[in-house]
Image 1: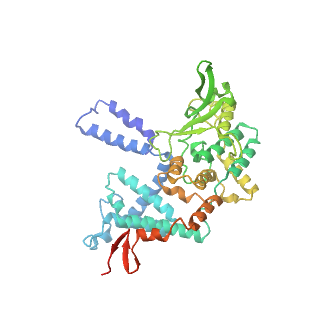
Image 2 (image 1 turned 45 degrees about the horizontal axis):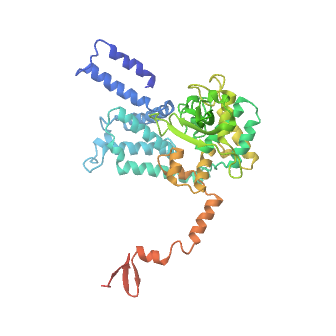
Image 3 (image 1 turned 180 degrees about the vertical axis):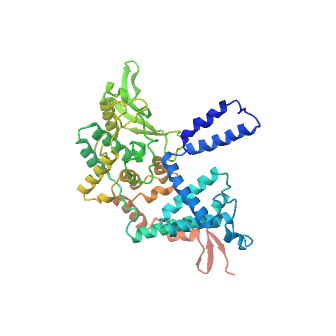
Length: 437
């Protein structure tokens, strides 16, 4: 079912036979509408992936077990056994059996199996099935085990996630390469590279990526989260009235050419939605202008201004688009250029994707000693998953060694204060004395 079906269902409310109240027609419309709205809450790409997982599950139930996918009947071996009387839960047996079947019979990786199980969970909800069994320790344990098997296999085969984090030096080199194109596309991708690094953006949040362009990132879905021209404000400090002195002026990108670069002080923008903001409430960002110097590699605010003056994006068109929103940069060319620059700098080009920019920004924040909760908010992570991306820097390693080697950092007295120890035949705990029994 596709979200485009919503208008058709809603139109039935105009039917003379559908009158709000306690009648079957109205109740059926309400149920159909709520189900379709739920489908429309996820991106098209995710829904397509769910369909693949659900099809595999239905095939397993119908062709292997020969039972109902929604548990309305039982497969023969279950009916002929005493498992239910022994405390086994039917739904748990089916879903864990499905996972094993996909892993062994389908020869899929543990990561794929877990995605299929998520798809089954979503679809069962829409079939009106109680999914409390998904919290069963056996089901949860199966998912964890599948992930561990997949990771171990990747490590054994040398295929683990070896994407490296971009550095300011890499982003600077990449920006120079893109700017050398002397085209709208090159300028747009320069902005994208710097924004992705500074604001930990996912590719879909700053680039339009069509279906025929392959991606190498797992956390990008559809181009529905892309920053639009109206999502960006440029801040200037100008003297509008000599009597009042300098005042802050907010300007849309399409009007940036009317204002001077020397008066630019900051940029505000919001991501209209993201994978962690499906409701589309918007995620705001603010960045003051930091002029290039010993500790500032590039001026991302100036780069955004220069693009606004050049392309003058407007309205709901993607911010990184031109010719009234009819043209935008190529994801493929961007990815290829990242690999090219990586190879030139002696880095592993095979692991170079747009995602190294996001990883690099998170790593730079971590290396600077910024707290985890700030990195989570800045990168829109709901958990500490970003720790899988960050890498140790020379500076952070030095800080760690200084802390570990500092004799005053953690002393014997600290041990005595927190745990039981024996001194002079007397037991101590947090300053309290107890005699030996």
